[in-house]
Length: 79
Image (cartoon, rainbow, N blue to C red):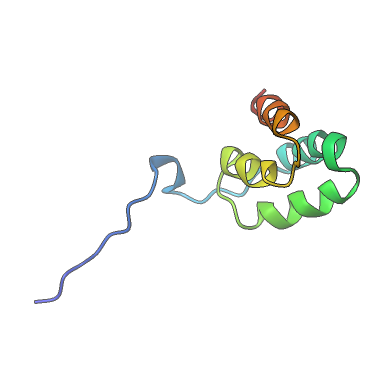
């Protein structure tokens, strides 16, 4: 008999929901404070790979060079 393997996923990611455009725009504006106008390009590209705003924020935070700025970005992205 064959075995069925189910990949473990966080519960929030069980249904892929497109991230709202207003959340994408808000994150773009927030990220732009730290890395400039390229932020909007990065946000749109990353949004295609993410299933939640939290996941998107975490991915984008990697592009913020300063650890203090990264923490500020993550804090702002949750509000």
